[in-house]
Image (cartoon, protein in one colour):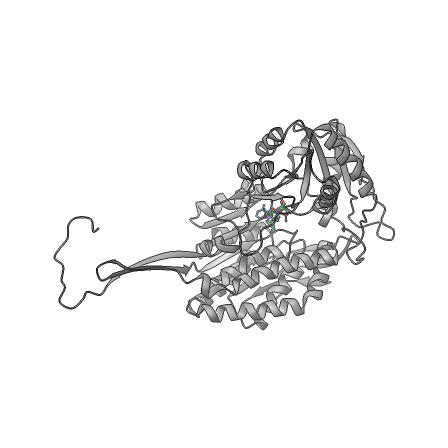
Length: 496
Ligand code: NAD
């Protein structure tokens, strides 16, 4: 069987005693095994990165950026292969995988601006003959730990920026769909990146804990579920490391009575069911303001969902594919069961989809649940499946209170024609990324991405301008070159 290994110091390494099955979720078959890195394998990667750091740190920013220009070309040239690998192991259909890759490539494009982003700040003559400037120096060896749901895009949020800032990187991707991530990283060598600057170790907690506890690792970027994000953040902090840990989500859309309902339904369809709802920015709750809006939403949604197509990633006509594992499929079903038991109304039931010829695949059909309340377990949990829950409230204020009371604060959206209401909403809502008639307000690569509350632990958001801050430390230098003959005596007061 095919083994997926590690990329360390420019070489692919497939040795290792411990492996885990990698499924094709579309068929349910095991097609590969991923080698789980031991502590010593991860230490080997850390040593390679540490060794590569002094030369890479001193490489001019423009030369580091040139690697990213070539890397972008290689990503585009190999897009079909990358999307195929994503489809095989994640299950997302080709046009969704292509969209993910494109958003990843945009982060590489931003990283191409390194010389501009790293210019620093300069002040001449802060006092007679004295100049002062701040520069951004790399941290050293930094690591990233990433989730299954965006095997191309989320790693690309991290390492292009870390690398152009002069750091060396170790990536620990999800063990559930590792191949596209590993393949993409391998293209960096062709792009001219020196060995050791970028390393990939596959594995689980053993690999992650080694990264968290090794004093040579200066910073950790994490994206995944909230319990693990919190563990990563507290452990990294206790070990004196810089850390940003992005967690889970429950994203609400407010549907106002004045909304263009047909448009809202179309937007909700894509944002709730696209990628089988396995997106941290998926809209999983629609909050209808007023019963008339609730009734219109449900009746239009019920009709629109009749056209939804779930099936294997390889069929481009499908709207979305399977979920990642059989356990996850069962977990989603149990959330739908619990909503039903706790009094919600299952309007469209996707618990038993029949996908002809793919009976062993991990499918869930689009599911619509009405009359969900804040007390229900299915509301409080992140379901991470193709399930849209509808709640009904009397006012926009009540909808906002609901959103603010939820533990997560990743993304949200309002559908309305009222500019004043939209402006009030975006100004006051306790959520990090807000859409106004935009269902998935994922910031473009030159803004930063991050949620509030328990959707992000740390101060700086992912990618964009925050990434320059996260992957560098600031040094401020103050220098005096006295004019000829000018000498100052000892000064005992604070210089001013
Ligand atoms: P996960 O938390 O299970 O895994 C994420 C990473 O952590 C993986 O690399 C995994 O190997 C590692 N990991 C898992 N358990 C660990 C443990 N006990 N100790 C150390 N490391 C461990 O997440 P997932 O299921 O792969 O991804 C889905 C989750 O990611 C969802 O909650 C989703 O909302 C979240 N997510 C968030 C964002 C965001 O930007 N906020 C983006 C994408 C996904």
